[in-house]
Length: 170
Image (cartoon, rainbow, N blue to C red; front, side, top):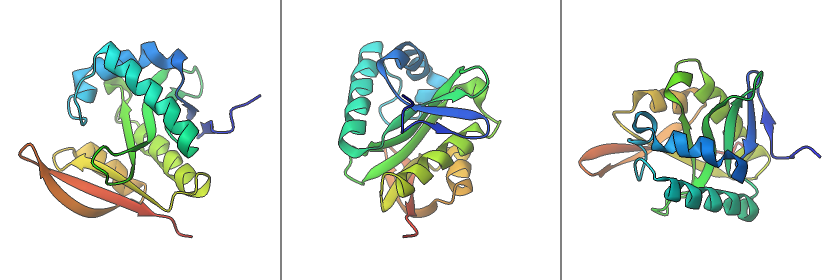
């Protein structure tokens, strides 16, 4: 039976993360070109395994969560997109991280847009936020492209951080 939470876009296949993704996630989260700017930074394999277990549990609790992003044609692992609870209590947040080689092709906007539509239309989330450093122009462009708007700013570790939001049209 097909997973009811799997999503297809024009070029991508998004599937809820599962234990079979662990090796791909370990490589992604260990890459400083991808995770050095993420909250918590580069992850060890043990941290990645714990986060994967948390992401799977989040799906069970919220009916939404993190997806592995794969190329529709050959199922090559491109990265992650999805929803998670912010540790600072700001709410349910959209996040995405793609391998450096997958950037610049519009995949992040395609995947993040699909995840955001799922959050509102299928998971029933009235509000979704996203957090990006002010210096992370690529992420800011993706968030604007999918219709998220700047909501607030704050400072963390000497760097300005921007909080975007999307409110369900319902």
